[in-house]
Amino acid sequence: ESTSPYRVCWKNEYVSSDEDWEFVAANQNGTITPRTGTSMAEFSTTTPSGDVTKFVTPSLDISALNHPQLEFYFANVSWLGDIDELRIYYKTSATGAWTQIGMDYTAEHTTWTKVTLSLPNPSNDYYIAFEGTSNYGRGLDVDDVWVGEGTAACEAPSNLTASNVGSTSADLSWDPAATGGPFEYEWAVFATGADPDVDTPIDSGITAIGTTTATATGLTADTMYDFYVRTICVPGTQSYSDIVGPETFSTTLGIEDQVFEDFSYYPNPVSGTLSLKASQEIQQVVVYDLLGQEVLKNTPDSLTPTLNFHNLQTGTYLMKVTINGAVGIYRIIKE
Image 1 (cartoon, rainbow, N blue to C red):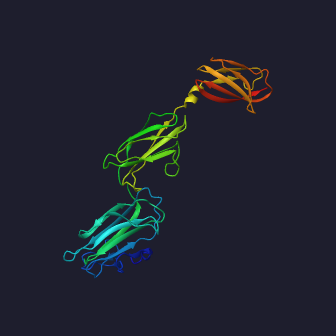
Image 2 (cartoon, rainbow, N blue to C red):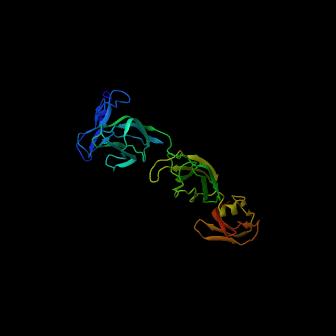
Image 3 (cartoon, one colour):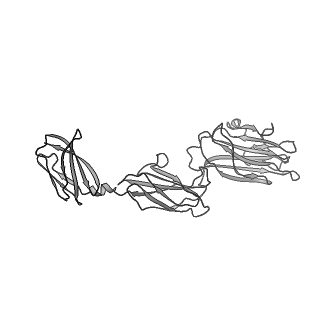
């Protein structure tokens, strides 16, 4: 509209001409008038063909949108079979390269036609260009341009499952999007309670097209995790479905943790005899002073051995216990 403070922020970017987009009240034969308001944008030249100019939005910050979307209406009435053409481009920074989205709109549209496009790779310095190619038609007309939060461009996966969960890894699986595809999927595992929109995942990845399984590694034993997945609607872009999750799971105890889960010793501090107890035979016990010198050693091969601390000086010691090949280190205080 002529009263809009944003109209002056749009810029012409010449591709193969110095012809401008203009704001008009009707196309060249009066068959198209503004869909709303009193003005619409039009690209029309008197050159038979070949003039190309992009009409570029001001910088847009769409980084906070989950499903950024462009919506607009266009018409391109022909003149004796000559039709002006439209193409849509975006770039993620002022110095970035233009990338086309949507299709080549080269067929005639004699009434306002609505187009809705997902905007890939959102950023805080985003630009959209309406590229007009003049073929000596009645003009390429655009009106009611809108950018905002849209709906997901594809369906989300479902039925998330974590299986074969070990102490440091877990197998992940899900059902594919119900329609469309096959798709790539982006999965991520977070510490329980983390925000998947802002927090850093413990492990994550992108599957091959059509693959609905993954393995998370680098996890910590006996720890709770949240698992999320979303569909990548267009490979190589940030056009996603809604994120699905969390599926919460817990890793198992590590081998050493399992061995020492039932291990105990008492009393501590100790003045004389230290009693040890385990569910598997204790193979060896070695006691060191804080200088690393061995002061006591025993190979009991027993579930309930004892150690004689009577002759050791008062102070702090480290006790290394070996059970079924696994080793645990414990701090003992001698009174």
